[in-house]
Length: 248
Image 1 (tube, helix red, strand yellow):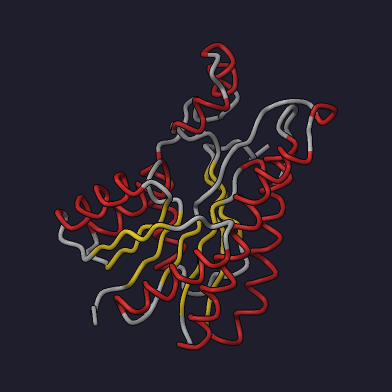
Image 2 (tube, rainbow, N blue to C red):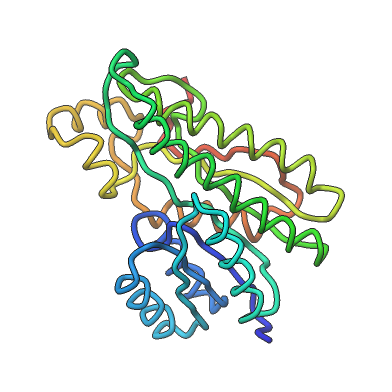
């Protein structure tokens, strides 16, 4: 069994999830990365091992409970426990006004962002409460606490993630398990480029950030590591990392 912290990361193959996996690997943690693209997943696991970490890739669709159950079980079979879980799997959905949204669009966003977070926490918490320790970090968004035109489904899903986080934290606290969320502002990832494909619109949005730029995934990974590994008296909280976007 590894003597290093065991970290499970969903949505680990791109963006914030990938940056977080690399950050923990540099700390020599044991890292389990989950996603749906096997070639990319195996390549990431190799990259993590090259940094000196023990690492495994496990294929999982977080909207499917059998996948999530198997993910947690296999992680524990491999490393004996899960100390930190980072739930970063999510999608942005299709932009558009409320009047154009459909049940299918709703399901696509909520299955990934809300149901996926719920199922991940369900099985992570079962393992962590049994072992009497653990830390869960969900990935929310600046949009988890405010509205945005033409993004109602994404906004609503991240509000739900924050509600799930706070409720789970209250349930888990008596067992010595912490549950928090990190809520990034605009971060330079493929998701941001998909959400704002127009360079002029993107520039205008970033001009509204007090620090006058997008964040990078590594900066959010640092926040996740702080919340997940170091902030031992912090639970039920949302750490907003957005360049000052919500200060006013």
